[in-house]
Image (cartoon, rainbow, N blue to C red; front, top):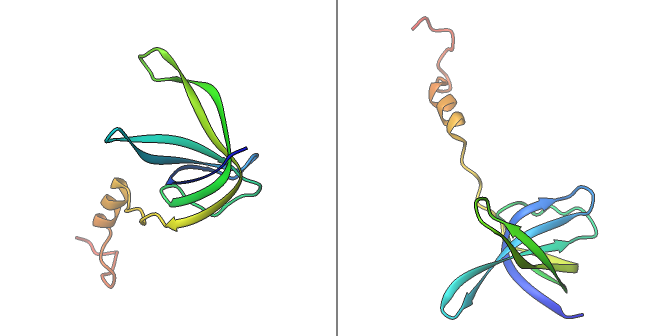
Length: 120
């Protein structure tokens, strides 16, 4: 079995059942930027988070699968996976900003030090 190393951005983390992460790898194909989705199967839960950038070394696995984009025909694809993985965090994800509703709540909340029971 071939051992490969990939670098990419974490798209999904599953720590329940069979722990795994899905990672988007970017690569160049004839001068064009392309993306490839990998599934890295893990022995134990991991503290990696969505949008972290990682490097993963593992045994290559592939199988034929299908992809169904809504409104289009089902396509046959090659699913890429890695087993017996060594995962290294290369760059932590940027902290997420607040959601739009949290922004509204923060605008409506009085600044610290101002009494909240003012009649106006």
